[in-house]
Structure formats: C-alpha cells, structure tokens
Length: 239
Image 1 (cartoon, rainbow, N blue to C red):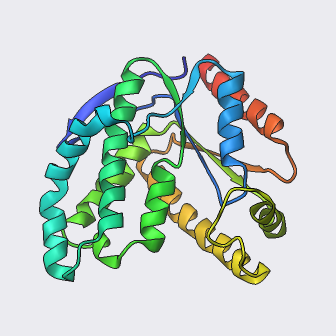
Image 2: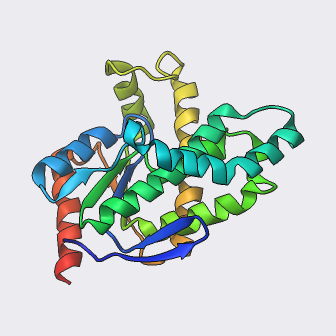
C-alpha cells in the first residue's frame, strides 16, 4: 500500500495526509476516463473513488448543507439570487472529502476522476464571482489546503489542440464545444488549461510533496502512461 494516513480535525473538515489518493485531470479529450480504467485494471490495490450520488451518503450531504448554509444565505442576501449549481458543487466537494478520508482510513488506494482539481477549476472559471468573496473566501482557502494535503499525486494528461479537437468531435460522448469551430475549441482548451494551472499551483503551495505527473497522450498510449504512473507510485512505496 502506498503511503500512510494521518488525520487532524480542522473545524468541519478532516485532513487526510499522504494517503494514496490520485486524481487524473486534463482538458476534454485527453484520455482521463480511459487512464483511470486502465490503472484500476492493472492494479487491484487501486479502486475508483467514492461517489456522492449514493443514497446512503445523505447524512453527510445534510451535514455539509447545514454547515455551509450561513455562507449560502449571506451570498443570497448579497447577490439576490440562489446560486444552485455553485452551491451543489461546493457541498458535493466537501462531502467527497469526507468519503475519501473514510475510504483511505480503510487502507484503500483511490483514483479520482472529476475530483477536487476538476471541481475547483470549474468553480474558479465558471462559477459566479460571489462565491469567491465573503464567508466563502475562507472555504476556498480550506479547500486548497485540505485537498492539497489529501491528494498524493495529480496525473495531468494533455495533447496538442488539434488532436484534442479531433477526439472531442469523433467520440460518441457529447460535449458543449463539440460543434464549435476549431478556433473556439482551442480557446476553450486554453481557458481550462489556465484554470488547472492555477488550482494545482495553489494546492502544491500547501503541500510541496504533492506530485504532478504530466503526460502527452498523443505521444504515449494509455497503456504506456498507465505503466509509468504505476511505476512511479510503486517506486515511492519502495523508497
């Protein structure tokens, strides 16, 4: 098993330190889902991270709703609107952290697809500006700190814009920019790359042991990337 788990209580959020929690990130078409599946297939010690969509997690969700409600009400009074999508993502991310800590305490190594880096990037780039100020400003600081200390490795996948554009258009999976022009898709990809850069920089600033492994999936196959990631994880364990 890679790493160990220690825990400290900080308000409502518990910090999982040096557990084997890996998040796969990257722009659309980079191969995130394919790599996550390959890692799980080739190493039985790894499993897909917990899902908050299961009904049995309703108590955790309710706890986080109640804890965050004062900040949401303050935001409503300021903005005069209920930011439903942003509120849902914030609650979900807090709940996911609780679930990840629970699973890690059981000695399980986890792969996260659309985890904290993805969610924080989405909120940073596309969320209402109101969620970055007031009482929620502290939530952002806590999110960067706790997830920066919880994640063990970030695997960043990318490829040239024209390759990603071809993949987005050719796959059956729908995407909001699938029918856009090449230039618009390239702008979208750069937009998200910038967001990932900032979020990851803030996380690594909280934990200089958080590793970021970068791969070009145009130059290396999913199998090759999977083998390298597993070798890196195993190498650190042996070290």
